[in-house]
Image (tube, rainbow, N blue to C red; front, side, top):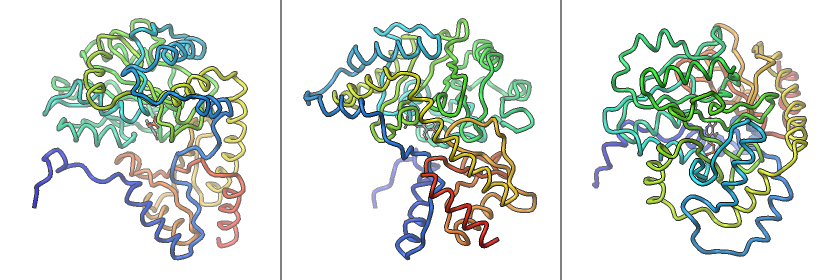
Length: 380
Ligand SMILES: Cc1ncc(COP(=O)(O)O)c(C=O)c1O
């Protein structure tokens, strides 16, 4: 038998990859499963985006840094929506989804044994990629009483000498908590003080959020922070795989060294579609958010029925709900799956601090969510 690489010793198959196999087998048995687990937007991307893709007829390899028109469109978008000014020549690196950026950044900056600050709860990919590059995750707890913000005093009590990267993710997935200017300033000050590269992962700032923010809007942020962003959620383009890394060329150039050895540019038509998306007027966000607001209301009613509580100010594509005492997140999730044929995500997928919570996705049609409410009301 050929032994797999040591870097896989500690890495498990992605939770959804495993759980969705079970969900599919239940569907194959004839169960009418409604999937409120996954955050893949079900709504259509803007018409102009699809037109731009269809009109493109260049099929060759593309520039490793994306075509200049795409970088210019990203720079304009950042200027218009986040009040951040960027040089399109060297402060923007388009990515095939922001997820791949997590690996590229980690490969560019982490050696075996280096340490990485990761939010708990948080997006599981930060942890698995850290392990893939044989670095060590050091979790920092986010708790509801602190508005899901880092406790810097507690973090500074840790030995930070081996820490090279801190992942932050505001607006935060899964909790939906939003950043204040002060929070971003504190994160930047912390990164500077300890010489830790701050990476803000920012794919949710336009979903149910009145006040989109970039960490790069903080004065001096570009010295120590870079930011990932994505078209997946903002424009319902998750399958297109378009993301971006924003920041100082002193960081981006190292990351490009990795990326340019791994792919050969993004398909031209997709870049044209991305440009069309970035140029959409603001009513795009309103239209999409109105749909999510209606769905969220019904999810809140579902939560009420099963005695879960939630923050009505939460943002993003999910409702993060606190479950009643006496049950675990996995127990509630299994109860919903086996009793009501409804799949939701247990908070523990996002770390130990997710125990006591579950996550409902808003990426399902209103009628289906209503059907979940009806099922629960009938059987209860
Ligand atoms: C916090 C967070 N970061 C990054 C991603 C990846 O998004 P993309 O589609 O841009 O790779 C996701 C997707 O679910 C996410 O929730």
